[in-house]
Image (cartoon, rainbow, N blue to C red; front, top):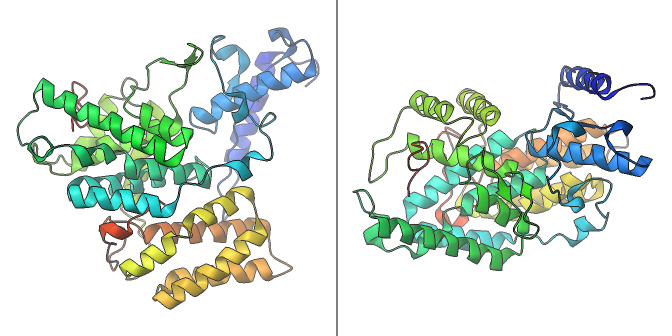
Length: 406
């Protein structure tokens, strides 16, 4: 914008953001994140100016999306992985991403369920909450990765002795240190198993207070607590509060909301706490019925979720058509009629020459939600659905009272 200073540009960006967010579309909710910079902030050429704006855009997305960030508002010593920014991200990176094997996630969640069913059920509920909150704030692949992180965030408990894991009294300092040791070992197991730095970063920092200043271990520079970590922290604490455990009785939902708000701004992200509360409240009145799904059907459908997520992220319409056709056949064979019908509708829309891109993406997202619901262990997710057994569950604390000490 020629002849415009930073303040005016930021005001214009905010006006655009509000106008976009106000658009009413029957099938999609559209928001915008905007980064703003200007020549007076030190850029020596147009590319540096674009780099500054991209840095602002990255911060806007990492701190919750749907916001405007100007270059003068971010710390000068903030270090950002330039491979995460749009202009410097190679097109080939998507093809090089290391997938997280479905069978490996199933194996680990099954092992946790065999060792401690309570922890496995807690992890599944937390994963469901995370996916619900991440909807429209994250891309399908980011939401999928957050779901996996939530499913596996307690995997270190596999090695904790029963005497500590099931103890009804407060843990001793030595026992608390043992729990922390096994949590670290769990993260190392996932680091070695999946080769996913993003997954490791989520699990490394979800227990970090939102107002903490992270330090990059390589550069020694400050960095941000990942958005996924902040969502996982809230979901983990909420579920711990509203469910009974061996060492305390459950709180009511409203009591848990009050505790989250009390810790907002210190332990938890204030804006995310409010969004979480809105999502959980809406979830109680917006149940979708998938129908009764067997363990075998859930497993068969779950094996295709990651492919669907990646095709959605890449806007790969040809890939979506192939996946929809295959999921239609698989779901129909397994008796998951609701999923089969949705998949057939998506396949038909993709075959049609008159198909509308927004309608296609909406149908694909609805199919993803139905597939994810077949994986849930939340008894409230569907009044007619039998939750999968532990072997077929898949991805789709202490002074600060809200966090579980276990």
